[in-house]
Amino acid sequence: MDEKDICILKKLYENEYISGEELASLLHVSRMAINKRIKSLQALGYRIESAKKKGYMLVDKDLIRIWEIEGHIQSSNLFKGFIYLNEVDSTNAYVKQNQQYLPNATLVYAERQTQGRGRFSRRWVDLDKGIKMSILLKLLLLDLEKIVPFTLFTGLVINRVLRKHGVESFIKWSNDIYLNGKKVCGILSELSGEVEGFGSIIIGIGINVNAKNVPEEIKDIATTLKAETLHDFDRTRLIIDILKEFERELSNFEKYGFSYFRDEYKSFCINLGKEILVNGERMLCKDIGKNGELVCEKDGKIVEISSGEVTIRF
Image 1 (cartoon, rainbow, N blue to C red):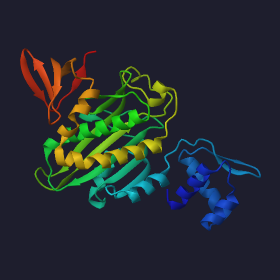
Image 2: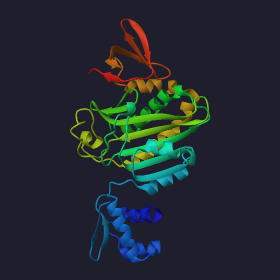
Image 3: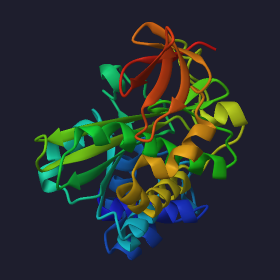
Image 4: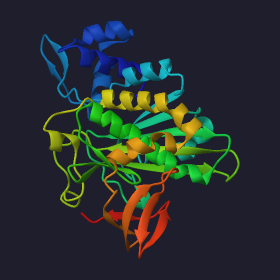
């Protein structure tokens, strides 16, 4: 998809109908070229129909408004690049493979992921009309201890944005957002580069937004914003709001660390006060430490957990 395709989508989004003649004049191409581009966009999944004497109509306007995200990136003091992909194996994998060519603070978005994954290499079930994106941050000093706090920081930012959009979401340590007891968002942060040297952190974010149905295989553990609230969400607005909040708070995270956000995180963390399983071992979650670690009690002793498989026993 190039700038001409994006311009066509923008005009289709802004108008009920727009003629091929208007589009051809706007882009300085032939009507045959416009027809060819419309067919290419239809092949990508955009629902575009035509009517005699009216022109083209975008039937389904739940699309990512690429031009608005590009506009935000251009005005941002943090983000320097934006790549939109119609389909990719995984946005994290794409960033990892191409990071040497990408500027710091690049956002990569994909409408579809064929091999998305979560923690412990679990497969991420790709739902339509969701948000699948990765943020690349290049670091002067690669520090393995930053991975958990960065994931928690990102989760807090997303939870904050969802709540501003009227969603009563909560955080499950360390990388999930829950709504009504089911997962609605997952975060996968990965370090790339040499330990104690130059490197980068790649933050993958997947949010189930406007899909009507959840596959049978995950319906007991996952849901979508639409399924729980019974209304559609503006995915483009959600993305931009997440980027804004991330940028607004990143300097506080870099200056003060996770401890700056600890109280807010604790107020929305569903692990606290519950019996949990950590890698199969039963313990009681009592607190969140200053660096984001779980503070648990097991057999009368305090145990700090910085990583691992955590299951809540509701």
